[in-house]
Image 1 (cartoon, rainbow, N blue to C red):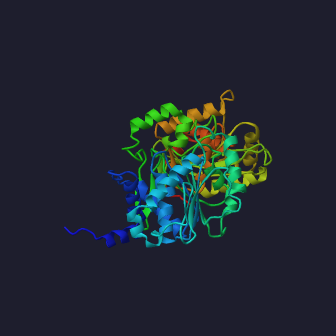
Image 2 (cartoon, one colour):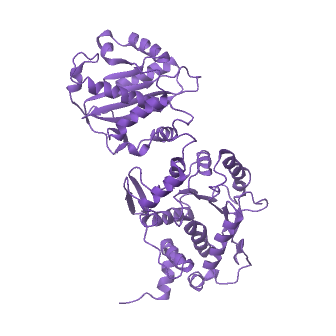
Image 3 (cartoon, rainbow, N blue to C red):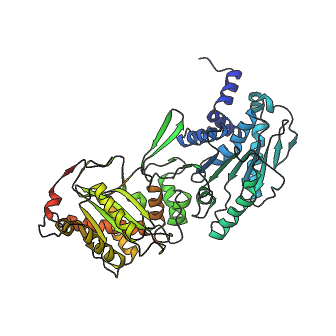
Length: 489
């Protein structure tokens, strides 16, 4: 068996960041071998896309103890400086102790003989070398900074933000806002070349107000968010030619974070904190009533269906602060599929036109509208629009128990999801608005899409009960007919 030569090993370490990370792990943990984990390969791939200029903004949201700091704050700066020793890098942590600890690990790597052998440009004595800053002979550096630390007069080509929040102290709205404000007014102004300089944020999610949420609201960031337990099927890119199918229910790291450990952490942290730190899905205080993981997900909408209907939630006016929502649902074999969802601040004429256009576009058999306040007015307007021959069947005024709260209605609707009867698409542009609202309910800013969902499930049950009832207002016979492929292009 032929063993690789030192020159071959050095060439591999310069070419493959994944191989480099494995060597760094061995250096920091003598006698141990890094386990072969697909998510480590995914992190390495995304970081190299940043290094190559393919992406300038990267968020890495993963559960704790997953090697993300070793890879991103220790190995990656060493790899980048090995290739480009003039690069200036800030690594920011929530306190100086953590920043110093990561800096010392970085220094242990770049001072190793194998590193100097692989990267000849880093073999000379550094211009400066202490617990906080390492300066190369080319003037590049890795500097450790703590949140709220002094950055005036300094600049960087790459800013790495590693756990900017202390989970035990700052995961409050006030604490998050202080850190976010420092990022905006101090740290983000330190980029040497704002157009081409790079920023990487790695953290476990802690709050709907945390830096991940804040920064994502300002500009596009590429995000690699991997929950400890997959709540849906996720396709993760590992390199330019390879992907990994992270299947719903699969554990991210069954060795370090087996189900038993996760169950203990869920019990210790409580549901909201567990969803944030381990599932990367923070909810507002009091949120989390809707478990998104209970919904089934479809890749392709079935072409066959028994009936299709709109669920409309009419706001009291365009200035009310509430959205109007129009959801398109279809039934097949006793299952309910969400086809489309849209929302907007529409006045009454606009809402009426949107409903009419949606009914025509999706060929909906029914339009379900709650018989209360603005819903009653919308029903009256639509009755004037549609011919008498079809409006009796088409327009369905839904009566709800006014004594029930929105939470109670959503809870009843979630029973159908728990039974595996409600299907959402795996991919759709409007999911970016729908899923966060579902996850934050009932403490989120909006709940109109939740209301439309609750109403849709309520109407779904009515349809199921009346399937063979010819006295049903909509006409029981229509539910025994199977439509085929009337999907708009």
